[in-house]
Length: 103
Length: 169
Image 1 (spheres, chains in turn cyan, red):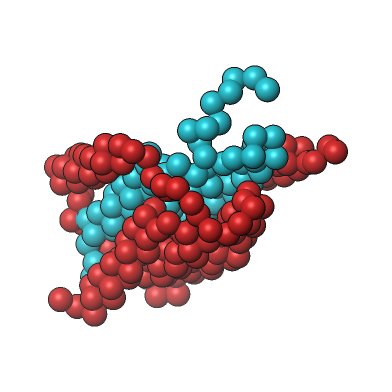
Image 2 (cartoon, rainbow over the protein chains, first blue to last red; image 1 turned 90 degrees about the vertical axis):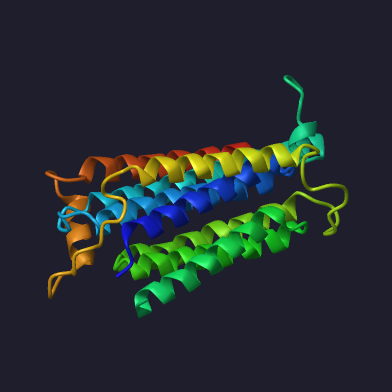
């Protein structure tokens, strides 16, 4: 049987890769891709803590994972709408070039 | 090494390799397709943890909706499909350093925790996590309030996304 540490290490590595993408990428859509990786890493942790807890019948971990799904869907729809709106007005999606405070 | 451990290692390497491609590949459409591959690996991880419903929701919601939304956003925010210029910041090594430090810090913090190498108990026979999850989501003693708040949040995000992306011209 796989110990809990393996899942936590996988989630930590996935989170770090997502963080790297958020910090390094210039395109705003690619930054949101990194955020998705980080949210998935958190979800692996939540489900792993549910599976390895002693109270398997209390479904808190899985319920939290579903709430994270809903929040991720909301985040990505509003975020991509903002990117599309910024592209219409400024003709760029490079985060460095979106530096105006007021249009 | 047991069969479950070998399967886990293969799935984890596949997931992490796809995730690295998401953040490093130049072509954004390819990055979105690598994200689909990563999400599928995470879905297999959920299945390995006997979280059947979460695995199915991962495939339906993440791969079916969110990844496709990303591909649409990539295509709507460019004039030609080639990516010109650098895709990463000049000081990308600083971001890599921060990411490695975060991973080292998380690993160090977790390795000092007493429950780190815990092994899961076997599921009791006839254990049905899907019906338990369904009851927990609508039971007033459990999680009906967060469930309803999530639905209101989704409605607000729907209206907000339509409003923000609406073309007034």
